[in-house]
Length: 349
Length: 201
Image 1 (cartoon, rainbow over the protein chains, first blue to last red):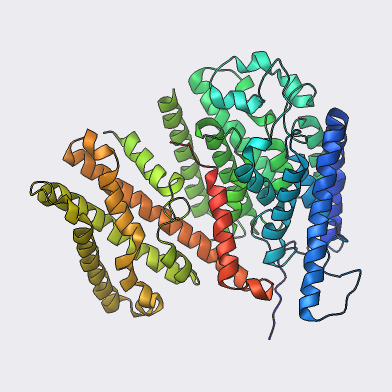
Image 2 (tube, each protein chain N blue to C red; image 1 turned 180 degrees about the horizontal axis):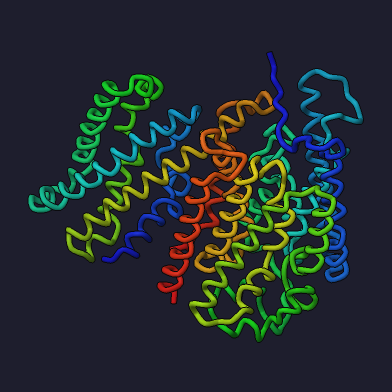
């Protein structure tokens, strides 16, 4: 007997289904796409177009070949083909918007194919994947073609905001190159094509929140964790309030928190688990940024935590509400994390 | 030698230089015993125990027996002997106290003897550069802490991987990718994800 288990996204309300959710995410991405095209023009159009075409072609060919191997007749339309519920387009848009503007087209194409194939199709299609397809594609090309992914930097700054942060994590010089208002609007700073503007991402996030197509706990906990840890460091190093704000606005944190971490397939099922998930994402991102060798930690922390989602959902401790015991353990973990951060900052200097 | 460097050694061995995903040691139990979460936990416990005791014993034997008699070239044979006798001990204890776990581990329990992760940690403690710069006592503490971190990292990844495999068992994977192939793809993606942690500590 063949059992097909329905995995998340679950049907919670009559009008909440995968198509509506994915269409909402696509709509929420429109301001980000608009700003990316306004700022980078042909480069952004090329990256977005190549990744959409690459992902859709991969999926189309995969299902046609699968049908051929099963001995079915050739049909132009295939019901497995998830173009019709917007999920492929959503993945492709999210993937392309995390890329730097100087990425050559073949790198974009390789990442799109790898992300679609290894991230989603061989797990059985929509709703069955372990890792976020967009994050898989992005990580694949970071590892394989890292040197091709260049930012067209301005001559003033010479590097992206997080590149500067990675070289010298606790310096007040950061503000002289990157004003907070520039990081907020995204005009005039280098960065990945969709991650530069905080305000466009926040508009998308608010839209998703009002349409309830979106698990708001994960991005809130994620951003608050990074903000909190950066505040602890700022108090310890006597840096002022701009430091946590800088951490939240720079890099892909907002984009990753709103659009990548909230993927309903690759996030935990229960509400407390989602809060722990967001917390762990924030801690990993902050540690990779401040202590790690890579400038940006959002992508890898999302991949690492995707890997632990079945662990969060493990039946022995996954609980649909907060208990006294879990609150107690969670508080201790938060305190330990703060302690670990302070010890790390003390030794890094 | 202070607590911070010991903690850093644990975190480094557990997450950043993870034995499975970064050093590619111990792949045999990683793929073999990870079908069920319960047997993965049992296996991780057994590996953790053997790893810590074997690293401590190997470190002491190396510095108090092999070095004074100038027979360091025997280290691999001696270490394997130590590991094999410890595995026998674990096997006897499990057979007496937990028959189901003993059955579910099956052939993989005696195979801990040849688990390269354990020999790798014992060997790595000796060939890495820290013993030459510190006293035997401090090196011993660092070696056992490294073994503890490595064992914990092994257990963490085993547990995560086995819960992923339990989830995959009920998902709609294409016929040709079912079973081991999809597990290998997942392991590769996990390994890519852990590259992000390089450089911390």
